[in-house]
Image (tube, rainbow, N blue to C red):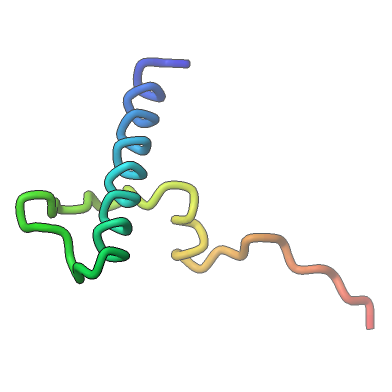
Length: 66
């Protein structure tokens, strides 16, 4: 892997760990994580799901010769 890919992978792993931690807090009855753990999300940081949010279909539509 390239250095850039390694850095991106580490950022994604950290985001997943944080997301899991926040969900655990919510399950325990807390509605939100404490202020000190809240952070701004960078634009374009949606990862693999960004295409879906932009309106791109997950799979190409099937051609119907009707």
